[in-house]
Amino acid sequence: MSRAFFGVAVLCTTLLFVGCDDAPTAPTPEVPVITESFSGTLTINGAITHPFVVGTPAAVTATLTAVSPDNTIPIGISLGTWSTQFETCQVVISNDLASEGRTIVGSAQTAGAFCVRAYDTGRLTEPTSYTLVVEHK
Image (cartoon, rainbow, N blue to C red; front, side, top):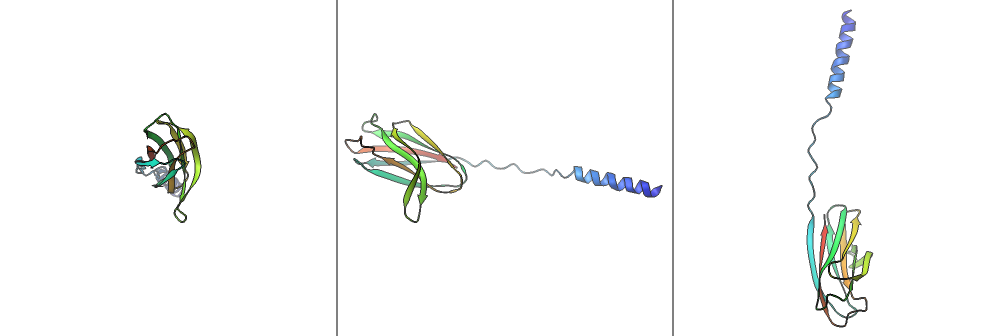
């Protein structure tokens, strides 16, 4: 009889410890959004590329926040991956008719080097200043 009691006690103790396996875990810290601003002046038929680094996979948003002197003339904006070896931007997503206030959104699948470009699509008649705001993690 004592052998049966001992077996039940061991079984109950084992179940008790198995049930207590849920140790509290620390919450995963939220990665803050990084906002970067890039400005330049496009010449007729010109393009300017701005590299930046994404620290964690997440959405990447580029917004054309200013175009001057004529904000009604569209320019091209694009997001892509940056090659540090060749210093080139491999375009992944673009908008060839971006006007002030337009946004393009991509998704960084890995951390790494990315780029945003502003370019003339054949519509500029004079040098044009712009500002792009990029948000990423």
